[in-house]
Amino acid sequence: MTTRLRPTWVEVDLEAIRHNVRTLMPAGAGLMAVVKANAYGHGDVAVARAAVEAGASWLGVALVEEGLALRSAGLGEMPILVLSEFPPGAERQALAASLTPSLYSEGGLARLVEAADGAPIGVHVKVDTGMHRAGVYPPEAAAAFIGRAAGSGLSLEGLWTHLARSEEDAATTEVQLSSFRAVVDEVRAAGHAPRFLHAANTGATIRHPEAHFDLVRTGIGIYGIEPAPGVGSELGLRPALTWRSEVTMVKRLPAGARMSYGHHYRLAHDSWVATVPAGYADGYPRLLSSRADVLIGGRRCRVAGSVTMDQLIVDCGDLEVEPGDGVVLLGTQGDETVSVEELANHSGTIGYEIVTRIGGRVPREYVGEEHAG
Figure 1 (cartoon, rainbow, N blue to C red):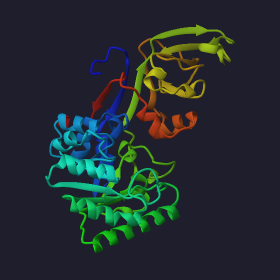
Figure 2: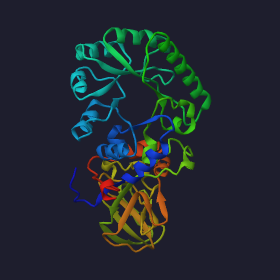
Figure 3: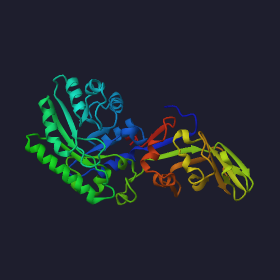
Figure 4: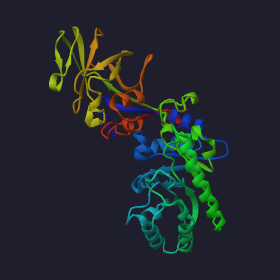
């Protein structure tokens, strides 16, 4: 959606994205900005451009469709790694768009060789060192798999793995890194020379410099969100997203009045009550009902009762509000902040889910455009 008629939108600070990329950039290694899932809800094209402006040397996506969209938007020269194997039937289109394939299965290898039709294609082979989601397994099989790929005309551009507990468990992370190093040694001993070794997600980029290798893959961190509570808090990462709305209706209701579907919320005092046009169809979790605060006039006001599909009700207490007053559902207003982590805690989830669930009917608007100075 490009036109905003309803007064509910997401504002993304691209200078915060650039700041976070520069902050997370390791000495001696490149940085892949992971912009899958519409850049974690922030808007993939604008975020990708800002990340590149800040020095990112790769982009990472989950879907071929995401890579194609970036190419169509003009990111024609930037290396883009698709982090999962190309789906069957997508290989030719993906290769025509110069998307870099991840590879880890015999079926994926056969399909890619057929689609390449003898053209020199660089691949990034993923090894499963303990995440057990995708990758060549057991890790000791990687060298033989790479040999079959090379014998079929593909070239090993990258070798990588994914860490399962880099934010919280140094011992498990070291076990995975040791396994990965052993694979690297075996692959090199077999005569293969990957240009890019990469293992570090945001957590490992922050906590495990030994995992930096040639390239780090930073996702959640470039959006200014900690990968786990306290991880990276000393770095000064800046949250890039603010979810804004406006008051559309105001009532003065007496103590005892009950709010929204099910009447689960009861006013403790005579209060001003505001309606805000955002709901669970926009990705504002229903689990925030009667738990979360929004910000109006720089003050915290409780979501009163059930979050509905398109609207929510807010108990403003003695704060006299008016239609058109600004509301922050996520972000900072005045001296108060409603953080991603706060909403995640109320919802029993993680910050990643809060931002990625903000729906497509909520327009994204951008500040900090580089050409604006």
